[in-house]
Length: 127
Image 1 (tube, helix red, strand yellow):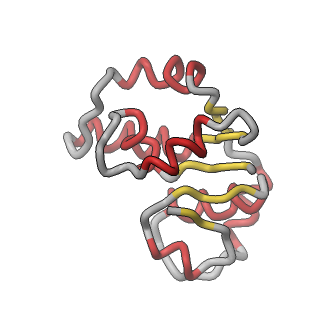
Image 2 (cartoon, one colour):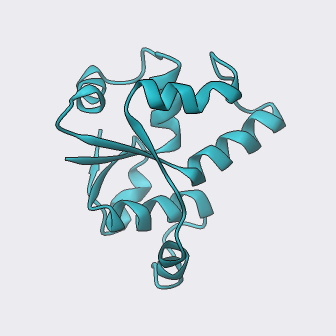
């Protein structure tokens, strides 16, 4: 299974937050699954850290090392992703979430998210 982590899911996983369901941790740690983190999520986290709206257990600078040690692949934003946002229904205006929808579809990935807003889109989710 291909997995794309929503920003909050990644933060909870990285921070070892008790709110993050154990079955999702198993999905991420399963060697048969491919797990992605979008550059859009990194961008969103950087903005929130800068504004003081997000605290990470570790320094932001260590995210790439954390991803590498947990076999989480950094997913770049491709031109096709930006083009696909144009045709995306306007159910939600958050640009980061809209990018995750198109990237999950491009990767044929299940989006790991607690956010039920994603149910409005044609995207596979799990929580």
